Image (cartoon, rainbow over all chains, first blue to last red; front, side, top):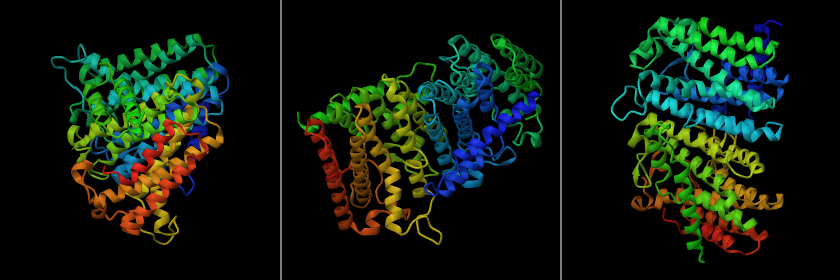
Length: 300
Length: 300
């Protein structure tokens, strides 16, 4: 099986499960259900959950025990997009080529749908059939998504210090930018690898290798995200470009220039690939490496 | 020890723990930390966490194992207040006598602080020292706070059907109102009792009695909340009154009148008290009953 058909199989598993998980009965308000499914089932790349399933298979041979955690990750990622798009945050009206949640459903529903996805992510993990996995998976997800991870990075990105001043928590602008990216994007991607490892009962050394791969990949992914905002095609991306510069955001291209940003992304992909040396060759490992390398040529 | 000094002792335990849990190092953005602590440490009644600790003591004699879950409940409650107060939701500018989070810190920070508290609530439970409690507590909290519980009720209250129309999910307006209150307020209060029971390794019969008490109490509490919006003193309440009528909200006073609402609250308190017949008398039980009964005379 080629990597692309392997990845497509995993993507189909995730899409089916996300559909099932949110096929709520009438006790759930229909408008809330509609808003949740509108954002969750709109055909994202499923990057994080795919990495979770492939990591589980690379370590232990069976991706099934990782499915609830993989879905939880995608729910957390989706909630973060809904809330980030709000007028008070990035004020985006387009996401994956469609109106953002608050444009489609109004701000109140968008806030509630985001809150619901965040909460239901933890509910999904609480229903993992292997009871011994529930607590460590909850801890991994909460840590990656919380004040030390995604929300902390998002805060520094949106409302925190964008420029250095006296008493800054950071030495220089590259340190600040790396720290934001490591938390805002990298933490959840590193969690994707780690959750796959936990589902496959990985040894501590393996978990650390997975996390290292995830951190490198997360940084590469965010650098190319910054690059796409400068060089990308709005139609292919399904969202507005050129927004970062307009908002005066600190980005890799603005800090290092386009060429050096590309070189840095390539170095991170290489570091991510090397972190997987620990694992024997397999279809799952090849697919992960392909995902890593495709970051450098991605168009959306 | 009188109930009031017993309750004061539990409240002090909770306040100390919430302070410790959010005393984040500099890795957490200072403004996010400030917003989290501003809303969390502003001297609420601590009703839910107190009920959790007292329930644990009533069942098992030791409230200590319930402390992380009690704190998690208060964090969930606080996040829901921050998000409910947002301009797109209830648009409140005053809470506990002080400016609401978005007035004080701006909307972006208020949204992020709410998201952070919701996430960190699950992180707190993931750190419960007794590992066997983590998974059932996470499940209880997620279910009470999620689409079948608090967020579902809040959605029907804020943006859902406030009046019945063809194809409604509810038979009549009292059914709709009870359903909203049961989910929006009752679910988290029932979870408070249940989490205390879980921490004390309660038997299933005991857990059901605790949940029944919590549901009755939650309804009584929400009815008196509705009444205070009509008859309450703004200074004592620390928030605006008369808002429900202005928003055309479905409330018990608007549906049943003030006298019948008071009678219904009294009936619920009595039902809550009776649900505790299963448990032997103790200082903890007396304190819970006092909390139940004080609902009928509360001023804030």
